[in-house]
Length: 181
Image (cartoon, rainbow, N blue to C red):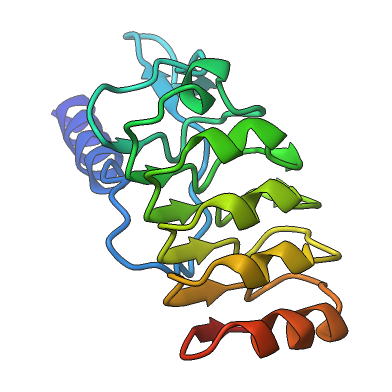
């Protein structure tokens, strides 16, 4: 009887955290890498990380959040049809590849909750970009080319150790942009 209660309780607990949808630009929680749970009759359940899913979904709205990615899949950077890209909650480090400039139709880019230390100047070439969320990374600087994003409506840099001087120069070039810091 207790065995079934434990299994039912675990099923409820595991099911409660399965939604990785991000509808808000800012997030207060850091997603973790996907896991799988194994149970047998003689031991307690064990949780082990699953393989990282590098499969790039089709369509113009691409959500690759919380997959444990340590790099951006090359196939993704070559997809010029993408309009919305969510790479939040991964383990991205360093900077995006300069080829991000190929994503000319991008209007929304969420890189929040990673471990990125830089952004490429090529982001400034994404003229259709309206939302750029780089919150909760390890950014120490911001490329001044972000000031070229004339269609930008929201720039979220919260939770980074960037230079205020850099942000002031960028903000001076961007009128009417909501800057979250």
